[in-house]
Figure 1: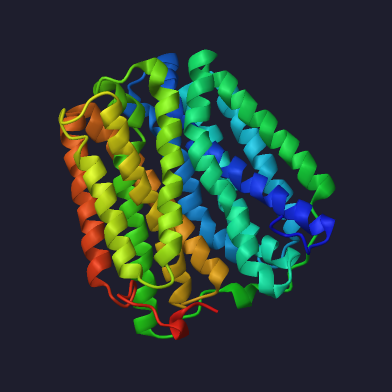
Figure 2: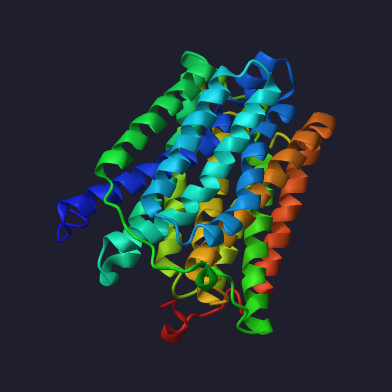
Length: 398
């Protein structure tokens, strides 16, 4: 067992938090796998249906940092229950929505819940374990996001194909209800000794803040590039000759390949951030580039998406560790800033991608995503204070 030395209550609590992050990520990315079915239901174009992703991301981008600061002194368990209740309401509204506008309203509620939950899970996990186990506990809890990213899109795509997209969202609602009840009865309560003023960002120096902002900007650029295209990955694969019946399996495979990116990043994130960012960005760039025109088709195009997702998933540990390592503010506020920047990229990428796809198609959208990804690579590579060539032990976060 990962935490065999912990009391049973703490171990159960960590597994419950793992389930929370899994549900959070699955709820966030679910529309990507059922985008085509949603568009058909509401008689809208696929580019317009992408607003379901944008609406969710909007609330996270706007709410992550303020909510982290404002709720620093609130009871953690009550906040967790409030956020999970938000997921229940959001997914239920989406499942029952008679119009696309109401569906987007439901996604706004989910985005606010997501901003709150993802801002408190790491601190909650840290309070369940001794200080020597904090890093391992947080890594374990956030493993739920990786599993959600792997299973969320193909899972909802499979249910949407076999039943309907509404059934997929009802299942998400049921999952959130069960999880809320489990948290209410089994998650050990923890107290927050943090005062609001202590959680406010502190500007140590202009150089430190500049480094921090570069990391946040790089994160936003890569998320923007990714979501310009990945929001519409199902119609993209169909255009490359993949059958609709194979979509869920294809998305499951590309999601599973993302684990390789996370594993690879873990090997060098504390030693050579610049090299890791360059390799990750190039994998993303090459994978996207192979999808331009009809260079590849069928399952070969799925392989290209897999390479792209390996690079994308590897970027996340580098930007998160870089933001914390800059020491411009508290670690939880730094994490919230990365969460906000990521979702700003998701918001703008999915929205802009929808407009470009509607008016120019993939012939314009794919090169646009490539150009943005290249900008992210260049910014990261030449920002040596944010992503050093070599990290020395003294530069590691405490």
